[in-house]
Image (cartoon, rainbow, N blue to C red; front, side, top):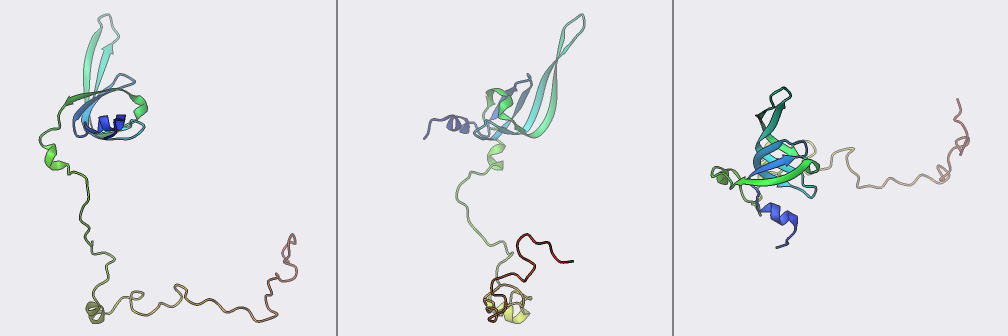
Length: 163
């Protein structure tokens, strides 16, 4: 297993994480994803700000705001702290990645030939070609003396069109 920063962060996916931002705010949420720029995705996020009153008496107050699903730009991240393991309710909500099972969705699938004959295929899905759609035939070359690869007189290079 590689020992880069990505693999170190990967072990904390689905954990509760406290992110300190450049402007002093702290965001607490469930860590879902990250990228090479350290952009972070948190679910069930809450923002915590410390407000200081500018009066004779210095008073600090902690303000909490519920945010939900957030994407935090990596440029603003100052520090990360793991608050706790994944919540027990998360184990059933998140499914592990890996190979899945492919199934037809029912759109765009061709019905068996027996169904096509009974119902009749819509235009364009039948056995024959649809007029004006597609190719198949190359247009015949022009007769000798017509076309010849030259534009008609007066339509040469640099001449204005006749009015």
